[in-house]
Length: 407
Ligand SMILES: Cc1cc2nc3c(=O)[nH]c(=O)nc-3n(C[C@H](O)[C@H](O)[C@H](O)COP(=O)(O)O)c2cc1C
Image (cartoon, rainbow, N blue to C red):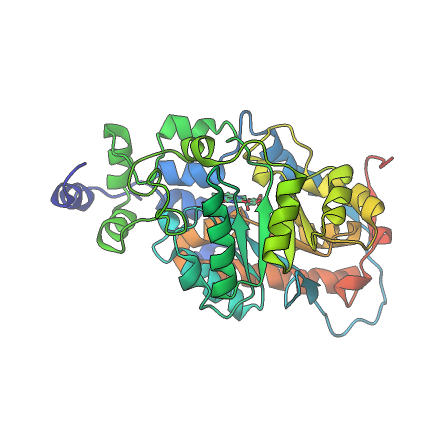
């Protein structure tokens, strides 16, 4: 470990933006712009941790491309005045049909981390997710008044899993999401190349990257110490002992979880419950059978099994299978308001996403997340008017034209 004064010396002689045109928050008009600003503001290991996927990143790309393979069919002269974007999922009425999926390590992307997401969620009346390997505690995040969901990973240690569920109840969380696509870690090759670990491990290469991002580095060094407070009382890996996220998952998660485990957690929790990370209509039916309130159709943003079908491409088949028996949330690849409209027209109740707000968090903390969310909200309102549809619940398959057939 290098001493703090060493870091400060290094960061003071290095300029991470050298030779690059200046980009400000006000220059960001879409997710791609936030991504570019995040790329400039973050040391490489962190940017690639957010941006990357598993193996050849086929699912990562396909999640986004799936939306482009469907065309919108607007109606005209529809006399639309008011636009209503509200939807109800997991017992919460949301002001937007889009929420912040749970993501790990947010404090590393910006020192405001989860606090920024929760406060902007309450401004937009939407829901935020806190990851099991989040960087703020269940107890602290329970104090925010936005609707809140805790994302549960089933650990090998059953006491830890039970403890997390009861802490969520005590802290006033509204819903639980059980992530089921991460029984082992996906093969995230970018993380091997950058050597990303938590806490950050310094190598000559990563040191250069941290040193060339002085603002980020000083915030990391001088603000609250990095921790994974929801698990660190049980597990030192990732909190006080450096480990990659892949090492953490492979050493700590219970590999052989099954539907009985899901049913037992649903029973212990007794409230709104989502199963996150399924893409198969058969699994969606089983989620109904075990009593889940919602499913999050997701492949973990292309970070787990590469080659998994895109969530958007499964919406219609899953809705056909489950009818109205369960709420459907589409998670993955959402970058535009029109993506949300397409997902809702295909049969979803709501969308969720990670990178659209993580790039913005990395770019400018709460200001960034607020701007990214406002831009998407504005897109949704504009696009609904252009679609000739006033209420999102009136979107249906007649507003879509698929370029490939759905059997
Ligand atoms: C940096 C990062 C960390 C993530 N951490 C978690 C996590 O701890 N638990 C989880 O269930 N999903 C996690 N996810 C997946 C997201 O919840 C979500 O499924 C995914 O980001 C959706 O794809 P999108 O980024 O294209 O919107 C993470 C995603 C990213 C990008």
